[in-house]
Length: 432
Image (cartoon, rainbow, N blue to C red; front, side, top):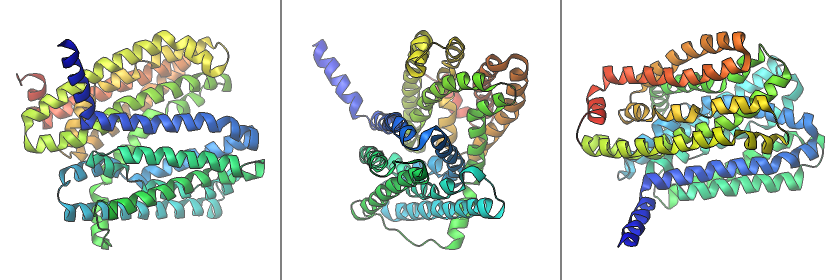
């Protein structure tokens, strides 16, 4: 009897679309990490450490430019698709607006980089590597991850992502053999992604019967204007989450930067966990919130407290295994990195505390609240981390980043109490 119940529960768990979304998102991230780990020694051997550094520097610039390309659609898109799953005509207009808007942003970002290179003579050491990397902007623009998230059908895109990364790896093996081929590394990555993404868009058009309309200028402008606050919110969030190393560079030597960077990279991988949970559940929570607040509360509670238990386990495991993890990656024992990692190990746990608040914002499409919370957070993070780093170095920065997670929790909770008190009361006080 017990086996039957257990089996039924286990099977039912993996039939849940939000759980499937989460598993496939993990698959995407895991494949990205694995391919990165495999490609790193191949690239260093082929183009040298200097070339590898310039390739990654170019990639960092492209990642920043991709915030413009994404323009908040990775947050707003899944919600719109989830609410229009059964209305192909309206869904066709949404898909067309999002794809064409992102391509337009990719064109503008490309023009901006060309002006920066040839007009302002920026990025002197790696200008051609950067120019060959702009294909990654169009790969991002055509990536329909947001569409499959909203449809809660992540299996196909997770397989497509693995395939594109394997194409990239094959391209490195076949074509990257000397330092002067460094400019082709990011180009191959962009071409692999763009090619697979075009196939996915063709699948959406022919198999899912989604039409691609040519949007009018006013429609594109209205769509971009509607997402402007999410775009600005993403900029502030990116700086708050990823700005720690830049702050530390003002006050520390290269050795300290290296040891902190190692710990921070691990914590940033763990920091993806709450983000993946939000992206997995919020298409479903958006539909539930529209139709039945009671079911929304029940589902969100189950996801929230389950995530908190998982995050606690992850943080405690990382804290306990920090010496082994650092030694495994660095091939030597770095006590300072271990200390940093043990503090930063609790970032995913603290970030998970804010999941319910963010889902409420997204569920009600409250872009203004997302904007307010992210920029208030940035106004706290910069002076707090700068002063703590100045006084206590890397340790101070670690505690500054931890306090940032607590402050954003406080900010979002206050905003929800002011604007979404009904949902807060239902979530924390009702007997649903």
